[in-house]
Length: 432
Figure 1: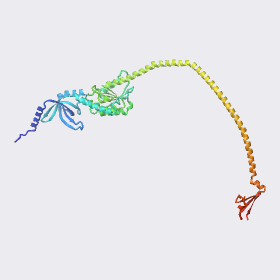
Figure 2: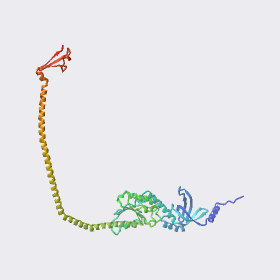
Figure 3: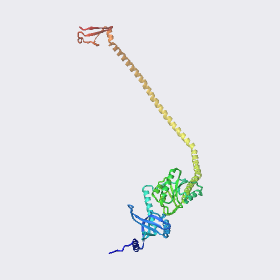
Figure 4: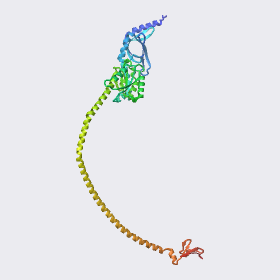
């Protein structure tokens, strides 16, 4: 059986007809924008994707288009409601019709968009960043810093061409109270993809001269509301949260706070409001100083008067107190003299008794000395009487053998050499 072949155009036409017949309605679709381009005619060409939430692998992809007549209304509406530019990377909920073109193939035509879905995704992302900062223990660090009483040295991070920067400076310079503020601009990009890196670099420059500043003000005013995504990043938030000076943000929007608004010390709506905040803070400080001055002028004289009265009261009491003290001292001196007199009498008695003992001891010692002297004389006589020299002078002799006295002749043997000592010398002999 022969089959009549179809041309590719005919086949695609059948597919187009089938799609239109089987899917005639419009459908709400959740997807992520991976590409957003606008041509010279005002048509917006998109690419929708769906990714696996765990692996981030691409699961589905489709071309999309927003015709210029729809895009002119849809884009401002979306950006006004979300405060977010209609750019790639957003998760959106769009109402589309399904189409198939013989030349361009399958595509989705966007006819409506629901900003609340994107707002929910943005809020979720903010919550995730804030939760991470809280887990790291840095979420409220900047809020816990104490704003200096005299906040006059202000480091400003802003675009030099931003209208909000000029408004901020004018507000400070022309304040009704004549306060003097010292400002320095640390330029940064305040819209677009470079916001995060640019502001972090500006913060680093402020940190390099930290001792010169009291506070940091980040202001933006004058930019598009749709360019706030750069202020909703983790890196910028953690830098602001841990910065050692209080940070005031005035980014110029009144919708939901950005992440850096939530971690900053103080958040105000506009650059002008930031200037008003600083002026009011200094005004409160000046008010407290005025109160202190008033206190000194009013309370100090009254305090001095009270102290004067107190002093006079004490001066009036001095004579009586001195008289009482003199009497007390007189009584104390009398008691002390009596105690000293009694103590000296007691000491004299003890010393007299000791002297009597000394005299008695002298007599006893003298008597003992006499007795010992007589005893020594007696011993001397006895020693002299027993002296060998005295015996020799009386005619006695001493016979020695080998230097020892011979007292028994039986101890001598023939041939022994002996020495006989007499009063006037000695002589030697031999035993026969």
